[in-house]
Length: 187
Image: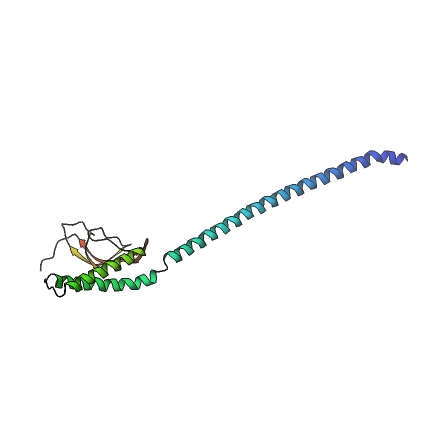
């Protein structure tokens, strides 16, 4: 029994050491769990942000698809419009001849042309206004240059084929002739 009394402080000391070790292990385990929780929360936030970005991108693509659904049709219809413009230009020559028998036909074609343009406007298909403007490769295609020192270099002086926008997107660039500075070569 004396041995037991002698060992009692040692036993208490050992229990204390075991308890301290358990406390240290629990603290380490708690820190580890807190770190894992923090990482899981960060991962969760990242996943939520990714999902939100995907949702926004999908909405934008869906909106663009709807917004520009008529683009292919519009590309075809502006070819018809080009032909209509050529007919109007030809008819304007007849109109100036004061031929009364053709006058109703000319007026009818003018009305149809105006209705055609209104229909294009409903779908936000607009002609690019470019005559007298500075050449912009985003909206214009220069098919030729003419020497002209009286105008600013790169100014559009003639439209060969009209360009069009659908909403804010280029449908077809305008084919234009622009000015070029310089001197004419003598021959």
